[in-house]
Image (cartoon, rainbow, N blue to C red; front, side):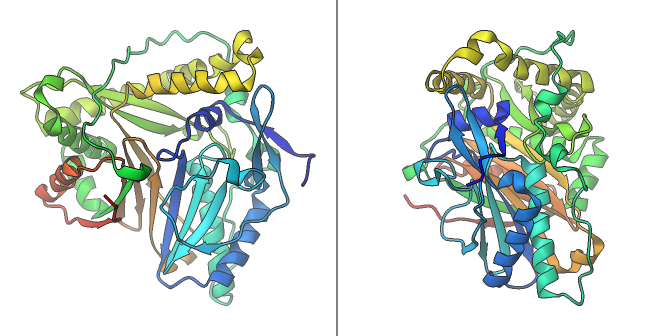
Length: 418
């Protein structure tokens, strides 16, 4: 084991470590579906080539007295056929001294599962594309040229804790909206800490046309559909609570960072429904509120608030066994102000030479409630939904909303055991 390279945990990673559990494992999955079946031996070679280009991920998480930290290890990942649920537990006693990500395959799909403390979606997509490139290059050496698949950033930039780097101690003058306790979905949760995973495939141009006609973004269109479905399922007595959607924001769009580690924040948009609300009015208000939340000043203010916590002397000096329960309590308080999470990875691109080999991308995130990830590739929007609930009423209504707008919808779902 190499002891000369170790990394401090960023503040987001500390939250994931303190709050991971059997259902919400704090893991996420990125998948790439090819137009050909996967050869395990070749994929294993491709993963090991990609791993050598991203030593930042070849780490194990260890406990210090005050905080966890990551230490680089010589272990390389080994590919296996998919044999468990997406987003498995990748941080527990069984993973001590091991890597906190894994690569699996099933027929023509390559899956990359990551523990969220190691990386965010941006880093994971780049790593997955490295794997896909090496795989296709090995399988089709005469057809795939040598390609630059990464930003070319230095190892120091890739390993940077960008939260720390861009943190300012100045007090923000931006006035943030006070968040109220949000409505939480009701109903029995799935047994044995299971999750339901559902993929919804649609033509992105169909949705973009609808959104453009309303002068809103694709994200606002999808979020308003989700909010309306949740509202229709709400007991009347609970309609005094807002429906609040939390959305991760890639901070690389606001700061010149090339880190391969976590660098994101979350914004929330709330809507307190009135009986006169329509889909159009909810979508319009959501779009307006989201624009306000995504101003550089507001994004910076939220990052400053997040980083201030660790800079309190008392917090720094408390031992880890006391810190983790405290962080968990804070996380639960934050979760009380969120109904569901919606993450838009945007339009995913690969070099033109790889396009004909790749069919689609998708992404799932573990959850204790409801989590939807949007990804667009080659004209297709894939909406990947994770749900902790037995009832699928909200999801059925959500998907029906697109079909009612004349959009062709194809749905794939996992089986769950009652």
